[in-house]
Length: 366
Image 1 (spheres, rainbow, N blue to C red):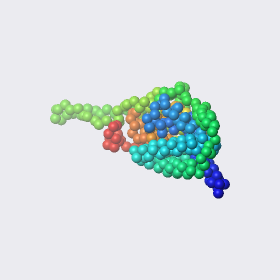
Image 2: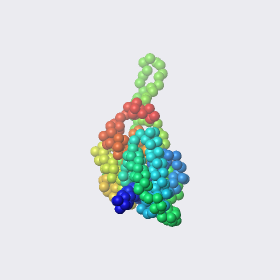
Image 3: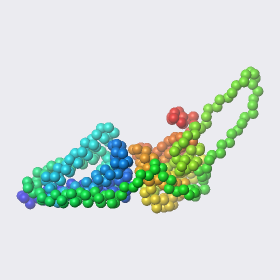
Image 4: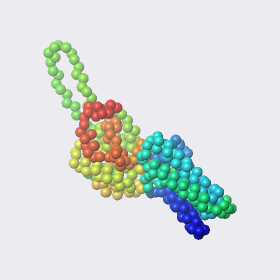
């Protein structure tokens, strides 16, 4: 009977330990700095963490998760401290996720397993409740006085785990919101289609007609295009606010981004009036940019910005790929992510054909 209890206790310890260790490792996928920065922008910033506190909190939290997972597999202070601390952390997670679900609904990725295993808040709540139940049961199975007494094992493992996370993903100095990383001439479009140059507008002036009523009148014509404004990207693309433009947010290694770029390239080949395309790349696997263009069939003007400014520019709650249709700097249409708001070439074709008057009916801000 004792052997069966010991085997069951070890089984529970391994299950919960693996859960915590995988959760910590997943937050470092596909690369530590990119994954942690994404976790900060998508999970911590909406909670009110500042950009000065979030980098420290995220790394400490992941280090604690890793340490608890490992410490569940040893006997020092297991029953009296490690299991209660693990339960307390899970209860905090459950409370936070329940609040987020109540406020925002059961949508999006809760970030428990980073981008490796997307999980909705309700799924994460259920997972955490089960883990709490397993830990309570484990605490009952372990006999009193079974704890080994060396507390230094706990502190050493905790600090080692946290320090390891800081070493794998060092905190970088804050980058400007938009960092121009390519001051040289922008690459040309290899499809030999129109490049990003100022639009030339030809105006036909009608001959004056005789006023039969001898009353001087002045014809008032409705504007045929939105008023020019600053989109904020002129430092990256000097002519972005002149005429119709397509601005894209892509990650070089993102398959969905490559698919969107392929669709845009195909549209430019079949539509001579397709607006010029410019790309803002995240500075993650930037060495893949040549392969990105090779696979998508064209090279477009592009700039690279750092991870956190990229997410901030993309917009809170949004994901890649991002595709914006701009007209004189005004945002006419914005597609993002791979769900309901994802980029659809047919929608872009439709909106490109609409006149300014038609667009203004559905978007009074233009």
